Length: 470
Image 1 (cartoon, rainbow, N blue to C red):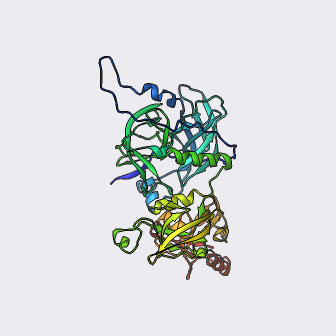
Image 2 (cartoon, rainbow, N blue to C red):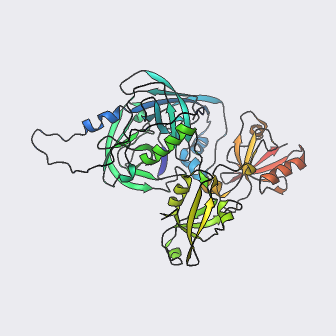
Image 3 (cartoon, helix red, strand yellow):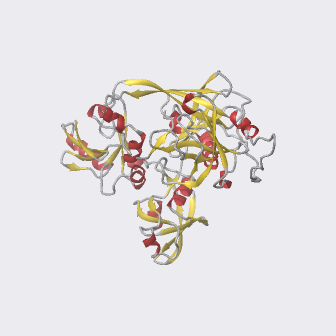
């Protein structure tokens, strides 16, 4: 079975920072074919990528992990199972320290470095080693965006070699590219390939996907490293591979430089990413559905979340969104990525088809982050945070629409919630004889029980567990 493998796993503290001036690569580019081989002439890209090599760093992280006691738990902790089911499996054991290796790319002379979120996630310490140097720098986390798997860290250094950033929208299939990173911890390494495909989505790795696919060999440790074109300009950040055994099999994915640049700029200025949200579930048109619409491309609304912007604007299930602010929407991914690139409170004009007629509505975006009315910290149980199952959460964690309840969004270590056995990702469906529909019903049931022992039924990866609470 093929599976997605994160190339290295292991966000630290959150810090704000100033703005950044990117080193943009020239936008006017000319493509040439390799010249005919002549005597004493060697076709080489050494000079083209020599400077780019100086912008790619090694990253070593340390974090606390839970011990795993048997093979089944190891299987359930595999990233593929976590991504597929959207739940955290395994039972917390004794805390242990682990280290992980990855790569990063220098984007400013004064020490800003972009990498993958999964490289530095939950790290207690982040150590950066520059190319051709044994000196180690302690890095601080500026900000991370798990939805795109990007993060920005910073070291205290000046005069660094900042990589030139290309306009990745100008990439073409067949362009020669090089992956630069630290595979298997062996140090700086370069592999060559081509752009195999563009705009790859629905891979199931990130919430926002627009990957560059390449056959340049990418291996564990390359994660967070650079994918550069034949002039050495950054076209993407290496992120994941499709593999049977965890090693490169010629299908690698990189996050486009244009997305990297936008996310990095926001993380450096604000320390976080806030995205617009309209509150719909969307899908692509299938061949049968296309027969029912005048427009054959767009994002089909399959459900509308009550009281969110799309609902307030009058959008309905079955509407086909074909444009936003005059930008054509060809598929569901187009709509998701465009809305997600806008800030909360932005006002947009949505053009849609309904019943053979094209109409437009204005919508003011809300914040994608769960609304405060839907989130409850310490919801009657010490250390337990829960949230309603809105459409965004159902889509992210692939939760069946027939399942009702509240999702456990956090469990504090050493709390009553942890003692009772709650885990992040659990869906609490029933307490005693009472069916849980939302946060309010959860809180009301606990108040009525007033500390009485009872069973809380949770759905954990499709398996029901009865937890004794009081």
